[in-house]
Amino acid sequence: MDTSESSTASEADADPSPPGRPRRGWRRWAMDTRPLRRPAYRRLWSSTIVTAVGSQLTAVAVPKQVYDITGSSAWVGYASLAGLLPMVVFALWGGAVADTMDRRRLLLITNSGIAVTSVLFWLQAAAGLDSVPVLMVLLATQQAFFGLNAPARNASVARLVPAEELAAAGALGSTVMQTGLVAGPLLAGALIPVVGLPELYLIDALALCVTLWAVVRLPPLPPSAGTGVRRAGVRQIAEGFRYIAGHKVLLLSLLADIIAMVLGMPRALFPQLAAETYAPYGEGLALGLLFAAIPIGAVLGGLFSGTFSRARRHGWMVIGAVVAWGAAITGFGLSTSLWLAVVFLVAAGVADMVSMVFRGAILLSAATDEMRGRMQGVFTVVVAGGPRLADALHGTAGAAFGPRTAVAGGGLLVVAAMLALAAAVPALRRYTVDSARAGG
Image: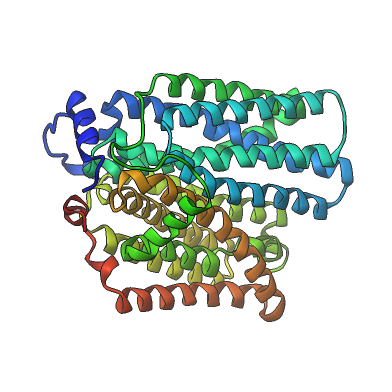
């Protein structure tokens, strides 16, 4: 498949995963845990369980502190934007860096940087600085470290598990992250009255120590032999974009995510829908359910991912998942019942999990190891930037046409655009696990 095939195979051979008996009955539907039989991947995944929740504590604490200082939701939005540009720039550069140095070493450096930043968050809160500029600088720094970290972390998975287990590893990782999106904010809400805001930052910093311990115990992950890449600059970043343009399946997998998120992510309209359409159910209850429904669906999709994580037609799984996402969002937009709306959003979350799993597997298996860091850098930007663009698009459309029309229309556009893309370019439809092994 690529120049790292021999190293990946040797690592897999050193830690064999016995096939065992075929899974029957309900076990066929349960999460595929084969990757956890591999100690290196298990350490990386286990650390994610802790940090997925810990990072959400900081994600809640920062906007809470900004609002406490300013009393303005606008400043909360400005603080969020302060972290976007550094994340985008450093994710692209970090992808190139991940292709030029040992990824384990890069993970140690960046996780240490994120932990130090969390300690600084704690110190400024404990000292009562009440400075929004300080918070924005710290947030920008933290997001820069995250941008450097994410491509190396994601690209490392393909060196820790064999190709046939990439989808299962993606389901395991995505399920943990989505669980953090649900449990983290709930835990933060419960802890703030008890321990106070500064301690949320400290808990996150302590959780990152678990990540550092796990990374220390990973095997070395040096660049592939013969890569010839010795530095990470603009030229190497541009090579990554040219590589994507020259490999249709990679480009299409990224476009599928852009279509789903930009056209079909309606979270910017949740407050208006909660206040207007679902007001009879209670605005607070409605808003909480709307924001929680998609992550809950994603967690459920992960827990019952045993069947789809073993699918071989990865391209069709992405196409079907994006179409299902669009259809579910359309149903949500047409719903006047809060409970029916939540059902549609949960279904959308399941579809999003399927899409995440197979897009991730394609990006790892269809790219050569010396390009995986840069592919994951672009992927990080797409995943983070798509929903933010959707916020602006749906907010504008909601003001012009009404929130329900904007949501339903966006869902229909997702279905139409994804089907048109799949029909026009067959590369994604034809992509299978066997294509990955053959290098196609």
